Image (cartoon, rainbow, N blue to C red; front, side, top):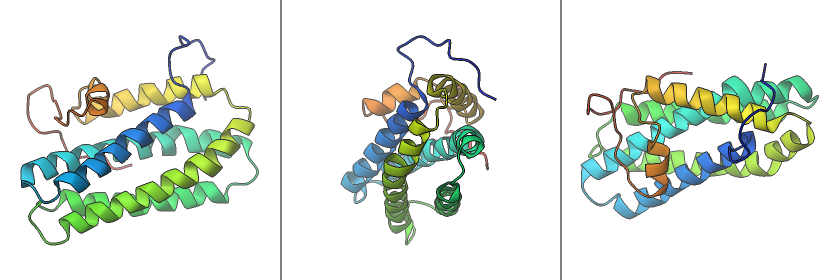
Length: 188
């Protein structure tokens, strides 16, 4: 159940929040292409950051956005397909988490993950968002719920909520309360 929209007008609605996530993760994949031949620690930071963002993004879609659409739409096949795409991405994320940057196929797996994600984003922004806009949902209230859940998940991972802003400006450091690397991703 989503709350009634009482958020300040500057807050992103559900679609704006998801689009912002899309832009941020696409930037990370583009940066990876520039650094994949460089030192392993830079690659590891980038991959861990992207995987954290993708895990959180998929979870808020699966917990809030897709169920809200499922409740109001008759046609649901596209949501099932999106969930299958999420599962494929989660498998690649799990593979990457168990690997070191200097291992064979590390770069290839992250590149393929990027291709899956780009395809998913294209379909989501062209098809799913269009259907969502027509569905009559309160996108402001749904966006507030999604933002709150995203912040909860970031806390669970030990990520600083301000990391989103740092990501936009190109800073790729994951911050934790203890100053250590972020914890592994929760499984949706």
